[in-house]
Structures are given as C-alpha cells and as structure tokens.
Image (cartoon, rainbow, N blue to C red; front, side):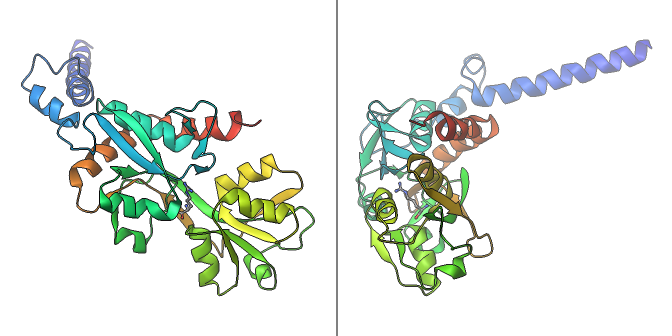
Length: 278
Ligand code: ARG
C-alpha cells in the first residue's frame, strides 16, 4: 500500500514536471526565471519581418461569407468572419495588430508576391497550381464544391449540369472544377452576383464552396443545395505566405495549430454559421 502510494506520488510529480515544461512553451509566466527566456521570445515570433512594423497585413477578398464579409463593425475594422477572427488571433499571439487589405480574389497571390501584403487569408483552397506561387500553412477548414439550384430544379448530380446554364465566380476553385468537367459557364466577379443571376432565373446552377453556398441559401428564398461527393473532392483552406518565407509560415502555423487544438477554429465555425443570420 505504502509503496503504491509512493509510486503514485512519483508518477504525479513527474507528470507535473512534464506539464510545467509544456507550459513554458506557450506561456510567458514561467519563462522569466529560467534559461528559456530567449527561446520564449523567439517563439513569440518577434523576429518575423512584416511589411509594416508591428502590423501583420492580411490580404483578403471580403465577398465570401461566413469566412470574410463587410459588416457594420467587424473583428478587424469593418471586416468580419471566421478568417478575420483567425487573422486577428494570429497577430495577437505574436504581439502585433492585424490589418486587412481587401482586393479581388484573383489579385491576392500577386499582391503577396509583390510584398503588398504579408499573408493571404481568404478561404483559399490549397491546390498544386497555387503552390507554385505561394507557400501554404497547415489547413484549418475542409470544404467541398456544391451546386446551388432553385428548389424545383431537376439537377440532382454534377452530370445533370451538362445542358444547363452554369454560373461560377471568377478564379474560384468552382470555376476550375466546372472547366475541368468540360462544361461551358459564365463567370462573375462576386458570389452574390452569380446567386442573383440564379434567383432571377437567368442561370440554372451556381457552383461554389459549401459553407458559402449555405449562407446564400439561408439568405435567399427558394434555393437549395445539391451535393455530389463523387464529382467534387474535399478542399482544404489554408493561409498563403510568400514563397520561401519560412519564418512567417512557422509563426502562422504555430497559431493555427494552437487554435485547432484548443477548439477555437470549430467554435468560430459554429459562431459564424449559426449566430450570424439576419
Ligand atoms: N475556396 C475557393 C478558392 O480557393 C474560393 C475562395 C474565395 N474566397 C474569397 N475570399 N473570395 O478558390
């Protein structure tokens, strides 16, 4: 009995020592009185150069609810959504403030290459072509393309789009999918424009990312979502940084991974898909 108690106490002490070590990695509290101080500072990402000192500038295209949209008051200036909350947290984790540059989706990776922005957060799907011009973080969200149709539509699968008028958004993965399927389509600059075309009966189907599609269906009468998992693969959203900027990538990954592990990302997902209905 006694021996068992001693062993248990020892195990507990060891466990506490381990957790104290782990706590040093993330918390500022215990770092000061140990040799870990320098490491802690480096971990805080203070060495990572940004376009403007103390500011982490993210490029986005705020036409993509629930990830980024313009609101009366958002988490970063007028910008609100899951991505905006993530961006803000990444900056705060590293003792910086987050700034947003809102631009066309197609312009984001060019702005990154030019150094106009430090990173792109835009519900951007990682794909092979984009990987040639940027480096991507750990992914934080899995989506898929879906079809938005009128409630009485006979479209039940991707193949049913063959003789229909298809609308997509220019430069989105939805456009790439429809192009790869060999269908003709019309491309719009904004999701809302494509959806209006559908609402007005000028097109039969809009192909766009799942969570955004759900938002449009919630906001407009008479629409429904049709899924086709055999035609549309899963897509992973990630943050893009300039090719070769490993310091920036490591800094972002550290925050993203912490937010994935502690449930922040899924809580934001729930918050912006449920609570933000007008
Ligand atoms: N996930 C799609 C893509 O990467 C659409 C992203 C659109 N994002 C936006 N912020 N407008 O192509």
